[in-house]
Length: 71
Image (cartoon, one colour):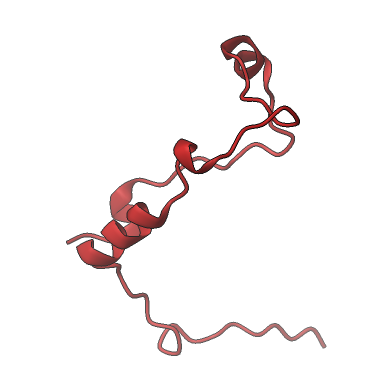
């Protein structure tokens, strides 16, 4: 007998982020000035960045209304 468990939506209600929570997440996001470059890790040139290919491509980003809900 094959049994699968599917949690009830009532157990984990979807909660939307508030504008304040979104602003806090964006404020804590890493920025380029947070990176310390040195001789072992120099910044990439524009040509190197053009040639860069991700090993695992990122999935398509959701629209903000899908990602955080509507306000």
